[in-house]
Length: 347
Image 1 (spheres, rainbow, N blue to C red):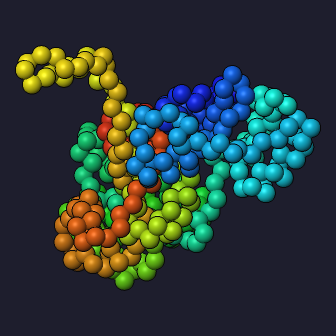
Image 2: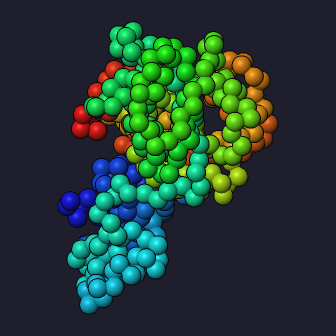
Image 3: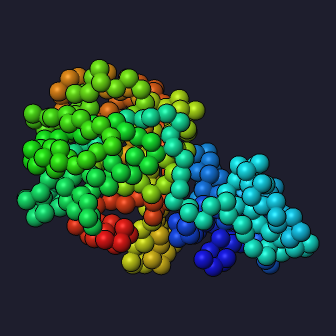
């Protein structure tokens, strides 16, 4: 990894920093001026800025930490102790004039993450027709579409198992016997219960069938996505904030491939932008949910989960978001995205 991947200048925008964090395997950038350490900027700093409704176009200095932990070369042997003491993942080693010489990381295996503080049940919505993946789904149900050696649903389960999850519920409908047959043949180190829809219940109605089965915070996820981020932080934010639902949201950047013209009131050109970029936070289809949401639904009544969220918002209930970078969301809901997911996972 080139050190330039984790260095950023003060005048760069927070949006540019997010993109840079996505490209880097690390979750921290070091703000510098002429190579000298000025500040640090983590994904957590950016997340807090976003949650305060901060403008992503502003310079990184607005969100950065200008009191970073650092060590001089003669103190480099204390790097691991320092990171443990301050609960940080990286520490820069600097010269006497604060020029950054190198960065020591707590763990080069950046995909490692903690377990959830408690075992959290996971509900996988797997009852849809998967029409956007036709013709594959004319033969196989979407949860069994292979990504390398395993179907997507098994990838999802294996991912959550690394957090310590061992109780899974899969809501099934279309080609459900094929799904059940596949998982029944596996040697599993987790419990998987199937919840059968007898009619289409939308993306939210199926969880009404879980009444009385889940009594604590649970994860609700689509059966065609993977989140490549540390969800223990999302869980902690969900609990601390007192959210009824926390939606995992991914930044998406779109570049309009044309020059955009804004017209004035008198028919003149007010302004022009050449191939402007637009940024949005999008719903990934993964949520942390409180059990009362399940209990308040009408049993076996069709409803989409976004409608449930809108209803809770109208009632003044707290609905939160947990923002992640663009590259942290892997989606296979459409054919082109399916191929991108396979490429990302090396399949």
